[in-house]
Image (tube, rainbow, N blue to C red; front, side, top):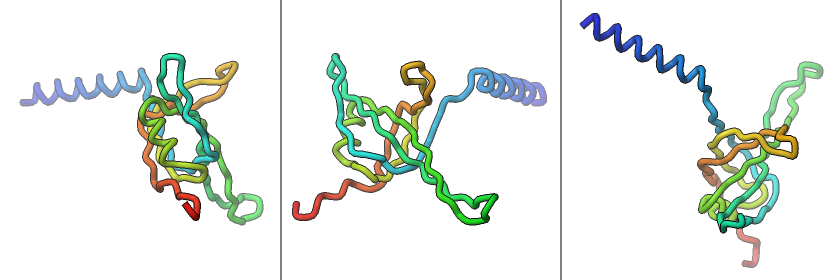
Length: 131
């Protein structure tokens, strides 16, 4: 009925407004691990892995018209079993997809990092030759 459709539109409008007010904290990036790293344990025994991912972007320079490569570095924290998995199956240069939430960190909480909910390893760590 016309009244039901109006109520549905009102509910959808309220839901959209609520999402806009609360904000959405979601980040998805694809890049390469910058360095090898080690899993650390918290005092409570929980695994934590802090890593940096390089995001490479190619764009045309407005000044020269030539293609230039720019790199942005993003800090990521991975917790628990995911941290152990990532450390065991990746290394420097490994391509990954990270999905998570933005969080503040640093001495003055003036830096942004991603706290990973998911890490997808796109290429397994290569074994050293002769292994």
